[in-house]
Length: 318
Image 1: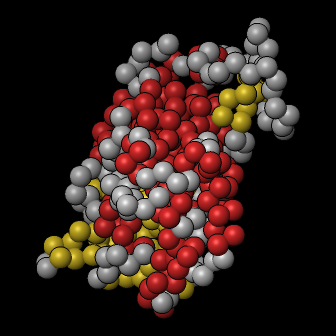
Image 2 (image 1 turned 180 degrees about the horizontal axis):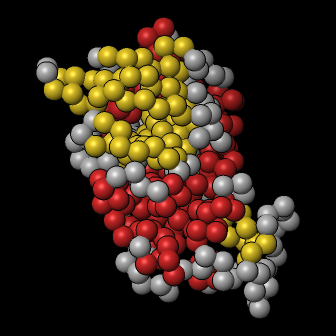
């Protein structure tokens, strides 16, 4: 879907991004992470040509991005900012409708799409459609920002630290909502963050940048179990320490909401004593495992595992 081949961006004689190579597959949640000034936002903005590249090629749908008319390409790439940037004097409906209107959608189609999107994030259309942004909480505004990017059903969504300005509770709630939303819509998402906990929880794969260059690209499991060098190991911090050695499937499901019925699936069954490295092996081929126990079987997802690791990285196993 998106491919970088030897991409660099220079300002004068200095490289902001240098010789970056990666490919984002269709439907993948691809996270770009790194310390401040590493080039992650520059890398993101080169995808939709908000920043021009200096060297190399970026491909979108197997064509160089330079071959696309700029406005058409941006219609096919939704963009979510940290600052949200909703139009304050427009209603929620009018904010979400911007790109569909530019693409010539009929009013009935736009209205139906807005209601569908609001329902996806549990915002009742009758209550929220005609509100102004100033009447919403920070978390609600950010949900609308995500919906605006999804409005015209683009195949790709770019997200630049969209939750970093929110309080911890709102941030975690929106992370969970986006994970569930992605299961339904299966968009190609390129997501920038500086937070390794967020990256581990959200990403199918992670690209770690340092001073404009790629240090490692891999799954969260690969980052935790096989960091390539000291920089990667130090950036991950203690997430791969105590818990990786001590926690079990039983520890994780203790904190999950109780379910009255385990959903039918072909998920493998594991015992409560199953360690995290073994769970990684199951999650390489399945999204969910079923943890057997005295209180009955409980489903455990890959996101549940990384959420647990992120929230308990200090070693305080609850």
